[in-house]
Image (cartoon, rainbow, N blue to C red; front, side):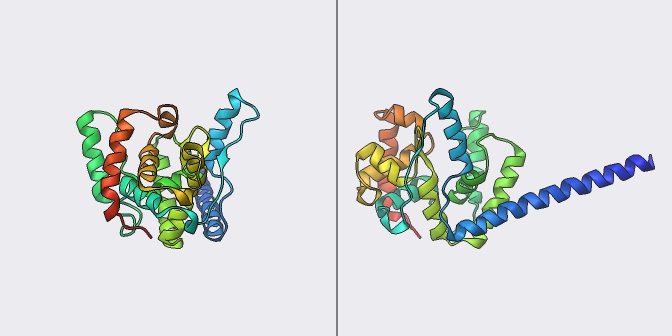
Length: 231
């Protein structure tokens, strides 16, 4: 029994050590990307692998643009649609999480997540889209790293450049060109609101651009945009 106890103790210490090494590895990338623009993300890698199953030569549509070259209309639209309290919270919108839990309980299934922009970015940079308690815990840790080491402006800049906006389409510049044939800096209010409405289900809306639900979401986001505060 003593030998088993010792093995268990060393195994536990080994797992804790691996966990800490993993967190330090993530922290290193967070610090690096504070100054250097990410070339790709974990989520991009997953989507590219999926595309290449059917089309081995497939490539993602993406082009990094600095914060100043992204339309303020798109910035306001994303804040209005995804995270109205972005500039004020420290990574988590507890009220939004509570409302999402109540909505999911009422519907009897997962229909809302309550994730902030910071949480979404943490997931996109490092994690898979699969749902698990471990992934949510890791997402929370990375969110705290981002919020404490990056400015809100940097978080938002990276987010706008890496989120999915269609089948193989990532970032504001690629999305603006894919849907409207213009650069991200030239997006008008309605175009921006429409792009923001696509964020929760971009590949569906890429195929169903005339979906009635998207038109309704666009109108709601347009109405909210004037009060959206951007970093």
